[in-house]
Length: 69
Image 1: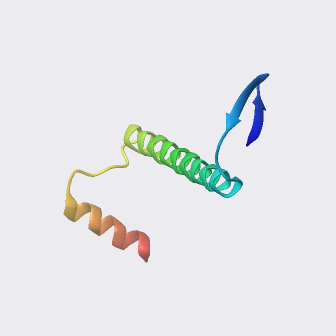
Image 2: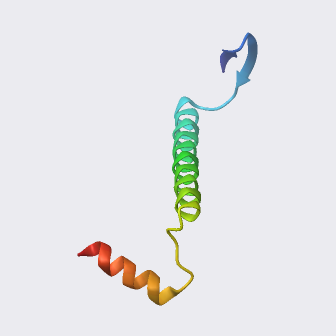
């Protein structure tokens, strides 16, 4: 059993180091996803405020085609 001290408080960790490292990796992935999602939402808000949006599916596909050229 290992002991971890965080902010002066002891915590008992009763899992293998492999399980602990797996959990840390999962949390890291989740944090990265949340940061990317937050960034995408922020860019979307800016685009909407600047008038860069469409309410038509056909217009959206047409604009995507233009951007690919």
